[in-house]
Image (cartoon, rainbow, N blue to C red):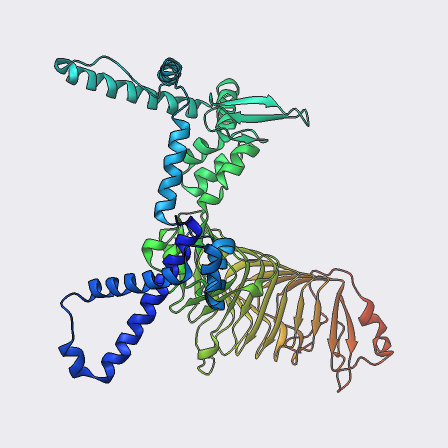
Length: 552
């Protein structure tokens, strides 16, 4: 009788013989096609089987049924393949697997099955499921199917609503104590979630309870912000901000800020459907929908304005307050500001490089009428423009400018006309082809810790009836002189300095003048050439010592 091992060996040997014989037949058929066609049997597979049986019987008669003898008759490659299938990666035929399975079933069949125990366990599981609401069971009669279906749907809806109620009321969260750290934590009995922080729903519910006790001053943030959405930013929302610190934080919530995408974020190619709430492609789009008092925030990058900007409402333009060079508006026109108030912070306005070869006849900023604007850390660069960089006209206070740079114009740096007033602190006016600041028609200006330098004309030019206050400011390298004034000009100056290429003929009240040579260096001892004029720092209401229109 053949052993399983010998059967596997004989099977593999037979397969090898069959493959070898088929390969040989194919080679012979290729040599004599005519003979192959004449000798082609009706059933090639049955013929191969018969030939293999005859060959196997002859081989079996020669070698016998001994597994050792069969292994000795195998070639080295066949022995390696046999060892690989027996030891390294054993091969199990379907017949062997079925045989083992029947044996296991026969062995397990000897165990006794406790039917009553199984039924008891199933009944307990069903009762537990019904108590948890996961299973509804009843004896349904055919005539009661509709009613039972409605009862099932009603009960299912009740369970769902109950689950939602526990979620909304925070009843699914319980506070427990951690056994290791003895610190409290929150555990969700439905989802199994555990967190250290107080759940959001619990925080909101506590805030709601506090608001019911304390009143409107303790109204939760979310509903209060929702209410303020219906208010105009100025003056309604601004008035709300003075109620308390909580109301102020809600009135200035980030939700009310309008954002404009820079060119680097694909603003020009962005689809409207992919825009986030209160986000816009251009500054014109944001200004068109902005309400009085709105804040428009600009991210780091470049913004292109081809036709200028018209701002006739009080708004805030906010960029990078630490470095205005990070937020650049490429202006092809002017910013026309007529709003009664406003704010600009951390922005650079300049002419586009691609159009710098064309001299443009636009001012960078025009504040007219009763317009007023306060600003800090702002740069106005009007290079390659034939108009002044800033034009202030109309009447009233035009604002307070802190850390503002006005530079590079082919005309006057700043032109002030009419009964307007401007205060500049820690600001710079430089690099203009004409005067740094020109005042006319009763305009007035106050400079504190400012620098007026490298202008081709005068640092300041005052027409008749104008006023000026100069405190701790510095004037340097203004080609025509420090100040040019006409009659009836009221100038108050104190603790100012000036660096000139030649000493003036008359003293400049409130200035300490230093002369520099042709190379731009300050020679030693030059301040002693006119000690009375250099050290005078007292305030004077009018300087009659400056002849008209002799330049200083």
